[in-house]
Image 1 (cartoon, rainbow, N blue to C red):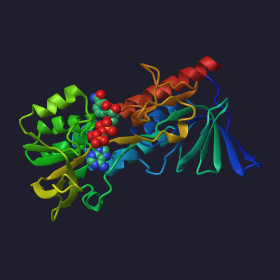
Image 2 (image 1 turned 90 degrees about the vertical axis):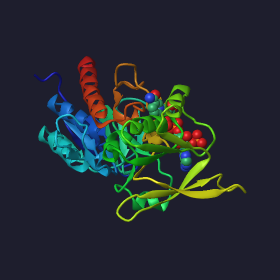
Image 3 (image 1 turned 120 degrees about the horizontal axis):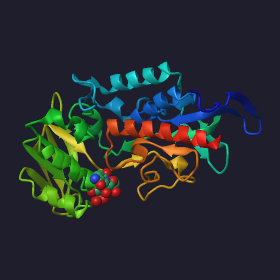
Image 4 (image 1 turned 60 degrees about the vertical axis):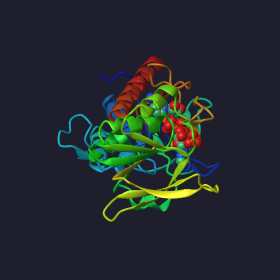
Length: 331
Ligand code: NDP
């Protein structure tokens, strides 16, 4: 049943600033599990979605190895393969998937506008922001060298591969404590490399790691380097860096987990939608609605708590349903 009539695509030329302008019904920005799931639902609801992938097509899962915790894959699946399957599924129902990076937005009135690559302006009735978050890195060469070979930014995704082994977590916030607690249940030993002599994490999280028998906290320490022939075999840690007491020492580890924060990819929407202190888009409780009618947010750009492929996919589904209901009410 067709609930409403989507706008016809109407390509035009905005000669004043050399932008092309295209009018569509439903714009989805981002190609992680949230974006593609929103696209599957929106396409099946006849919203004729156009999805822009962003720079990292497939999102954060394309840089993980095996995904073993997404329901429906008893043998596990590689991150890139799963994202390819999601893309195909979205396209099967008619999603127009395009490569492009959102460079500016204008939600000051209707219609809603987003510009891609500085040149293509999309004018839409509804917009689903599913731009995800980017894990922060320390910026040392070893992180790149051992990416996918012992360095990870997600314990829930990759911790299983280090069962019975020794690992280290860098960071002292809630994420680091949560990752360390999770890993402590799987690994023999977990080091926490904390750059100050205090945690940033909340008190209950601090308590959890400080009382775990197999977590050792290395206070006032920073990661200097990693070593190993076929993957990570150890880390060089520096204590009290830049002081007369500075000392370097090695720890034997098989995996390193970075938990020094994530940056939600919300910058270009900040003038319009509400964001929290750390940049995550705030949605109405129990829905994906932002404070701008017709603009919805899904996945890691609005969720700093769960950050899983399956929860991102679920919120993408919710965003498409919220968008469809919004359009129905508008008619
Ligand atoms: P945070 O920004 O809170 O913490 C980052 C941690 O990494 C800090 O300890 C920081 O040290 C350290 N750090 C940053 N840069 C470096 C660096 N270059 N070298 C070494 N250490 C570094 O990020 P989180 O991801 O932990 O949390 C983000 C938000 O999400 C927070 O508001 C948090 O409360 C929330 N959250 C909530 C959860 C929940 O409710 N279950 C779970 C996870 C997160 P320093 O303290 O010295 O700056």
